[in-house]
Amino acid sequence: MRFAVDIPNFGEYFHPRTMAEIGKEAEDAGWDGLFIWDHLWLGETDPFVDPWVALTAIALNTERIRLGTMVTPLARRSAWKLARETVSVDQVSDGRLILGVGLGAPPDLEFASFGMETDNITRARMLDEGLDVLTSLWSGDPTSYRGQHYQIDNVTFQPPTLQQPRIPIWVAGVWPRKPPFRRAARWDGMFPIKNDGTEPTDMTSEMPVLMPQDIEDAVIFTKSYRVSEGPFDVVTGIQDSMMSRSELGRIAAEYEDAGLTWQTHSFGPWNGTIEECRARIRQGPPTM
Image 1 (cartoon, rainbow, N blue to C red):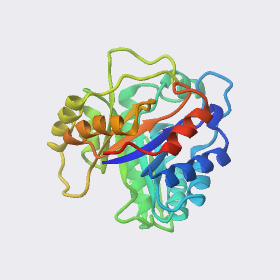
Image 2 (cartoon, rainbow, N blue to C red):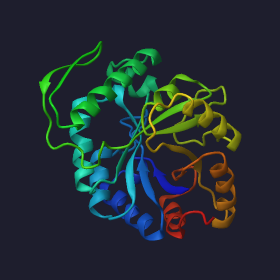
Image 3 (cartoon, rainbow, N blue to C red):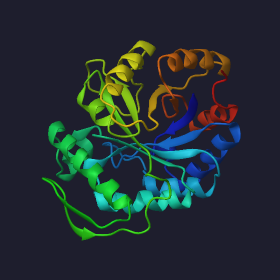
Image 4 (tube, one colour):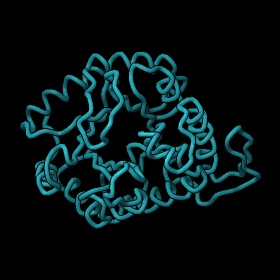
C-alpha cells in the first residue's frame, strides 16, 4: 500500500511556491505521492493555480515522490496541449508523473460557464478519443487521427514520454456506475469515487467514502475487463483526520485486503487551516 497527499489547486493552496513547499514536506515525511486537483473555476473568487505550473514547481523541489493530477477532465482540455504539458512534467520530474483522468465536475460551472459540452455521454466519448490522441502523441511517432471530436493530420511530437511504455493513466469514476470502470480496465489504474445518490453542491465539502467491500466489488468488476497483464493500481481517497497514524494504518489495512494499492489523503478547508493541514502532513503517512 502506498499513501499520497491530495490537495486542491485553489484557496490557500494556490501559489506554486506553496505547492512546492508542501511537496518537499510530504517527501521528507515519507509520503509516496502528492496529487493536486485540476479545476479552473468553482463559482467563487478564490485564487487558482494552473496544475501543470504547480506540478513543475513540485517536481523541481522533490526527488522521490510520485506526482500528478487527481483528476484532469480531458474533455475540458486540448489533448495535444495536454500532451506537451504532461511530457514536460514527466521529463522535469525524471519520470515521476501519473495522470489521473475523468469526466470532471461540476459540469455546470467548469464546462457550461465556458460554453463547453456538459452532457456526460458526450464528454465520455471525448475522454476516450482524447486518451487515444494523447497516448499516440506521447509515443513520438507520427500521429494521424479521425474521430468525432478530434482530428490530427500527420503530427509528430518530440520528445516521447520518459516513462515507458507511457505515463501511467488512472481513470476515475463514480461507483457503482459501470462504464468508467470498463474504461479504466484499458489503462493503468482505477480511482473509484462514492455515489450516495446526491450531487455535490460544494467542491470543498466532505465527500462520501467507499467502504472496503465497495473497493472489492469495483476491483472484481474492473479486472474482469482487463486484457493486459501489466501493472494495475487501485486507488481511492479519504478525508484525512486527526486520528493517530496507527489507527489510520489499521483502517488502510482493511482496504489493502480489498485490493487497494494507493490511498490518497485529502487535505483542504474541511480539515482546517492550511497551517493545520501542513502540520498533519509533516507527521507522515499511516503506519501499517
